Image (tube, rainbow over all chains, first blue to last red; front, side):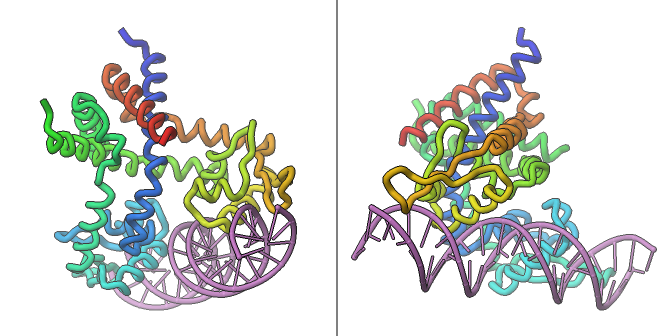
Length: 147
Length: 147
DNA sequence: TAAGATTGATAAATCAATCTTA
DNA sequence: TAAGATTGATTTATCAATCTTA
């Protein structure tokens, strides 16, 4: 039987390690952004959009927990580079859809391929541990989306 | 027996989940920085320094994979807020040590306490899985430091 | 009057040029 | 001449004020 106290200590160790590991891989992510000539905010925008559906400026601002003006600047940049465009919202002339262009879809895909490349440290782990990690993180990601 | 191909697929799933999870917890980290009135670069600087030993500007720049001027601006900010100070390097009048002040040490500790608080999703996991996570990430963090 | 977004002003992060000492 | 760091200029990101439509 594991006490709540023990469990918290375990979770703290796990999180601390995960945190340090993720931070230690930052340079790789920065390089990927640089190669694609994307700012961190550009990357976040691409991650929030996809080929099939747009989002309004307002929705993006809410999702990022940021001000609406932030979204305007980012979309301006993407639009200048031909990665996204604004489109009118049927029935509300204040609002605007942000949609990816084909080129934006391509860039998003390139970015994801780069970012989702597992770091060598993970490849060095035992398969058994990787199974646990995959199961656990696919679960917590799901939990959070549901929340 | 697990083929290299299978293992890479497993690692990719694990990394993808870990990545999404970490990204999903960004808002909490941003709030922690805001409460302590620290920019992301301030936080990185505090993470790189400690109460017992300073580092030179040059070392910090190398460690962050960034330009030296970046370090100057960050240390300027920390110095203005009384969190760090520059000190001469014995024997090389070009170089400077950056050391935390007592207040800087305190702020670093406050920041770490906030950042290392495990997200609720982790606390909801089975103790057995947490043991695996703690072991695995403590190992990969160690590997990377050695690299 | 409020919702949705843009514009203008400030702060933060990066890049190039400069200054000082080795 | 190069190493170590700072200063100045540009780009990003954030904050406050404004504009347009509901």
